[in-house]
Amino acid sequence: MPTASRPGAPAFVRARRISPATTRSILLGLLFTLPWIIGILVFRAYPVAAALSYSFTDYRGMMEAKFVGLDNYIFLLTKDQEFWTGVSNTLIYTLIALPSAVVTSLATAIMLNAKIRGQALYRTLYYLPVLVPDVALSIVWLQMFNPQFGLVNSLIEWLGSLFGVQILGPGWLASEFWSKPTLVLMNIWLIGNAMVIYLASLQDVPQDLLDAASIDGAGWFQRLRNITIPMITPVVFFQLVTGLIGSLQLFTQPYVMTSGQGTPANSMMFYSMLLYRNAFQYFNMGRATAMAWMLFIAILLLTLIVFRSSARWVYYGGEERK
Amino acid sequence: MTVAAATRGTKVVVWYKIPAVSLTLRLLRHLVLLVLGLSFLLPFWWMLGTALKPKYAMFVMPPLLFPWQDPKTWNVLVWSNFPQSFTFTNPPFMVFVFNTLVICGLATVGALISNPLAAYGLSRIRWPGRNVMFAITISTIFLPFYVTMIPLFLVFRTLGWVGTPLPLIVPAFFGSPFFIFLLRQFFMTIPQELSEAARIDGASEFRIFGSVILPLAKPALAVIALFEFLNAWRDFLGPLLYLSRKDQYTVSLGMMFFRMEYDTEWGMMMAMATMITIPIIVVFFFTQRTFIQGITLTGIKG
Image (cartoon, rainbow over all chains, first blue to last red):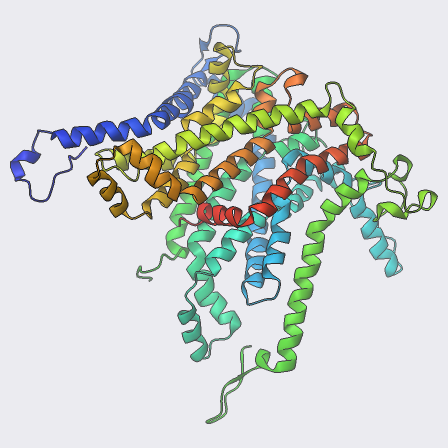
């Protein structure tokens, strides 16, 4: 760690001796951050390391842990059918949910960004769903999307009857094919957070840039494409990263909707539900921690990929663009 | 698609600036926003509406979009689901509410103690190692919950805390990276001169923290209190892991348990869902400005 030195101090003082003032500042700094340092060590650093070491053992939570090398990883990757079901469900969900959430929240924010009457009211309206506790939300969703007596299918049927056709709605959460799309719909209902953030960043786009473009004859769409969107790419990028991390860890909604079973036909068995099941129903802590570490690595890799790609599409103000 | 005409010497006329077109477009946008907004409200309506329906009207086809539409009980709303759902289960739902409030309150106190301290140390005191600490803080934001979940569970089990609400409360007293980041950003905007002046007057660092910085940071502290409280109120996985006896359940866990036991009591279920949602919405309406500020603060760090 470099020692802070005053600009006027002679160079040799810098070499070894730490001045009393510096010592004092270190002590003060450590004192203020002490609870947090304990928080890092006890609630973060230790568990991460312990999880890694458990992942190389056969540990049932009660008996002594037995070192088994890479067995847990090998079993999960080559023999465990459930594991791959969890992986593919989670990836499929993420691939549909993430882009659709980004597009809808951005589109809503752009629509709201103009000088429009009732902006605050609309903003509140779109934000409200975010406040509903996940358990309550999941149960309401179960009711609304019930294939027999749910609201959604009867609305679909009613719409069909207006045109004289009889349409039967899909099975939604009861159908292997529709269960994930239903979950995606539910998460589109929760775009409020992202939308508020986009709206705030849209309002930071410099007006003079937009005006200059207008004078040069750029239309609404050109301004949007060439100024507004590039200016907010850092925010989109951040939303993408947090959204990715969030949807890979999806748990509460599918757990509540399927009572932890991941039905129908395992189509709602997501990675973190499986991890939970391994740890707290099969009490196979070794295998569960191996899953946790693989999730960790997957998140790191995917985030890294997004980061890498960001050089090409994220624009930070003031930097040269090729 | 944009520029319609640019004849010599005349002003450029864009097609969507023609008054009639522009008006239509604006109305169209309102229409889209309104329809979308209504579809965002629909689940709320359905939640409340189902809670107010008589039992036999629950499965009437087509479903009653308005709970009072049922021809048998025209104009009658069934309010009894609300009081009934509070006492129906054993232990009653009231107990779950009380448990949740205790956890939320204590966790919020913890968050309000640990996070400002850490944020102060990371922004208002110059010390070697500060930047390293800050970098570590930021990197822990991205640590997935599931990586630490099992070892932490085992630690709490060794301590004998599993089956008590302690694992849901105590960690809040040791800081959360997200809140520390948020507060640090806020503390950085407070002019350094204020601290200097207090220092010259002989105030200790803790004095400056307590009587200069904290009072100025009230809006940011409000954001943290609000977010911590709501997170604890809505948390499901934490209580699922650590609470084993029914009389310790939180509202989220209590609702889950209710759904598994009485999966046909839709009216009461929706009454519960409404009751655990309404307090949040009320809080939101009173603190809307703080709320929006907080979300914006957390989202923009590109």
